[in-house]
Image (cartoon, rainbow, N blue to C red; front, side, top):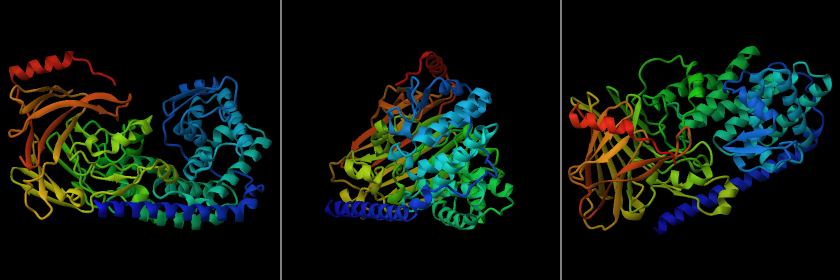
Length: 587
């Protein structure tokens, strides 16, 4: 325990010192270029407006015109005041407001009133931009604002007078220069990539910025090479990051072509690698697996991205660099997390879900992880990141990863990164005559309890059965017999699944939304049904249940279980009818 604690403290100190150094360099850079950034820029015209791939809702334009701003699950009515003068109800709401991505809804309405409303709101921002909170000048927020203003420039500039045109371009060029000077302070991971993407857009779309194209394209190529892994996953291991990046990188590729500038090869290669990775994470219903910060899948955005997917064929079986495995047989799909935590600097959204898996049959998901909600994430993040919120084994009620816990440190680091977790995950995959065998073992509990967790999954070739075994082994290889530490093997069920315990307490009958009946069994253990919550619902958190097998390592160090598709029978037919009558419960 002492060695693990010392290791975690060293990690935290390194992160804090790195953040202090970056912030100091950024302030020095801003001081050196501050006067030039505040002077009127040389940009006098807009050359091109990039395409916006994010879907828009024209009905929201009426809400904005009426002074109602709905972001991140919060509603603010301005009552005649500027939205930039209204106290923000949450940090996510404020980020969305200052990011200006909502301009696309006004453009979708395409009327003289919405164009005038958009120009008025942007004019209010320009007049107040030096008085807004520091959150509006965070690197990722500035990057989103630059991309949004450039993408919606036709809405703002068509039919406007020369005075607003010049004021808009001066403000935009100042923000581009500010972001260029503060790039060193951009956090690792997605925020830094977003900043570089915004700078690429600024260099391509604004006049007299061509001299920066080669330099910023080179920086973007280097960052893509570091963050996009060889198999197409992001270094943060979060599937949601792939969607965010592709929504910006695909139009950027087109913007390079429209300016007759060759896109960087690293940009093209990154897009080509990320597309198959998105298909790798998809279940039969089109939703992405809930690993490491993924929430509800934005189906509209995912469908838009996949239009650009030129790759064909079945998804890959394993992504060794990202640390995921996929098994498929018939209509059954299994996705499993078999990777170590991402580096601390990009682990602010990563979860302690090593060896967790998700299971789906056709368009019905059966076993899931809890995921994260679309709004109100701060209220659920601590729970959702814990091992107990994942379909895996939890030993001694202890998460497999340790997060930064001090509030002051979390505020300074803008999140709670992972400071310790599994150092090594061994994965073995074998094709057998009867199906596919996948075995993985991680050492997250070895430092504190001298225990390893091994999980083996066997998927039948016809897709009608999944067998599993979870084993606790001593660090030296011997099975644990003398420990009194408790363990719990959890299987969180999708809220669309109706579950009822069998009479022998060794199994559970599951009725899926597609009316299939599955049986979960554990012949040597007592099976219970406990409350759970599904956080990644499109309509918010939902009540659900989880199958739990509890025990003590000194009694049994191995738990065998199975999911089996049930053949048609009178009992199965009755279960289908009962499941059809039971309502789904919101949280």
